Image 1 (cartoon, rainbow, N blue to C red):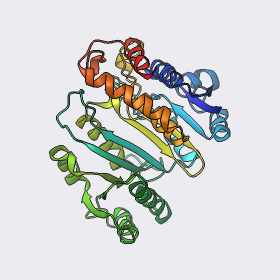
Image 2: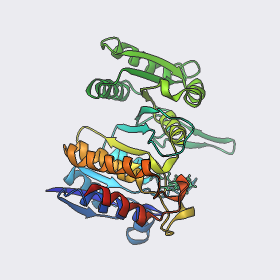
Image 3: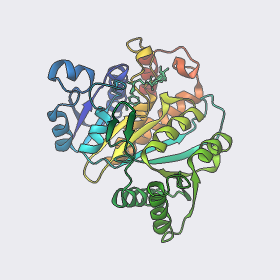
Length: 331
Ligand code: NAD
C-alpha cells in the first residue's frame, strides 16, 4: 500500500482531484491519500498558504499529487508552487507534450518533453525596489543547478529511448547566466551518444509553432520552461490535457500544467485529463507500470471515440461524465 499526499488546491483543483482519485482507484492500486490543504483555504485557516505540516507530510510520504493553486499577483503571499519546489528541492520539472488521436489540434504527431529547471533563474523571488525609480529582479543561474538539470535531461533521453536533446537559452544576450547554462549543456552532452543542439528562446518559440514534430527532449532554465510548456500545451489541444512532475533526489510532486481556472470552477466542466495524466506519471514513478498503462489506454480509447469530451475539447460532457467514461474503459 502506498501513502500519498493529496493537495486538492483551489479553483477547479478539488473537482479535478476528486476525478483523478476515482480513476486511479478504479485500476485497483492500493493508495491511502493523506489530504492536506494549501493556498487560499490554508490562508483562512492557518494564516499561511503553505503550513509547515504540508511540507512535512510530503517529506514523510515522499510522493504528492496536487491540484492547481491560485497565486495572488503582485502582492500577498509567496507562491505555494515555488515554495514547494524550493523546500523539497524538486529541481526537475518534467512536462511531456503528446498529441492524442481524436483531440482536435493543429498538429498530428507532436511527442516532445520539456525538462525545466525548477529552483532558480528569475523564480528565486529576489526582488527589490529601486527607490521611487522602479524595481529589480535577480536572475540566478548556478553551475550546480545547471549541471544536475542537464544531467537529468540526458538520463531521461537515455532511459526513455529518446533520440535528441535541445537546449533553449538566450545566451546571445545574457552571456554570463544563460551562457553558463549553455556551456555546461555542451560539456555534458559531448560525453553522450545522442544528437544534441541548442536554440535561442525566441527562435524556439517560432520553430515549435512551425514544426513541433521536429523536437524531442528540450532542456531549459525556469522561465523559458514555464512559457514554452504553455505554448506547447496549445499545440496539442490546450492546457486541460498536459501533465507535469516536479522531481528531486528524495521527493516528487505531480501536478497539471494548468492553473486554478477560476472562470470555470465549481461548474462540473473542467477537463481532469491533465491531473489524470499526472497521476499516470506518478504511478510509473512508483513502479506501477501496468496500472499506469491501463489509464493511458482508457484515455486513448475515449478520445479516439470522441463521444464523451469536455467543453474545452469541443464536447459537452461534464467532468463527472468524462470520468465515468474513463473508468468504464479501465475495468
Ligand atoms: P489557468 O491555467 O488557470 O487558465 C487558463 C485558461 O485555460 C482558462 O480559460 C481556463 O478556463 C482554461 N483551463 C485551464 N485548465 C483547464 C481545464 N483543466 N479544463 C478546462 N479548461 C481549463 O491560467 P490562469 O487563468 O492564468 O491562472 C489562474 C490561477 O492559477 C492564477 O492565480 C495562477 O497563478 C494559478 N496557476 C497555478 C498553477 C499551479 O498551481 N500549478 C499553474 C498555473 C497558474
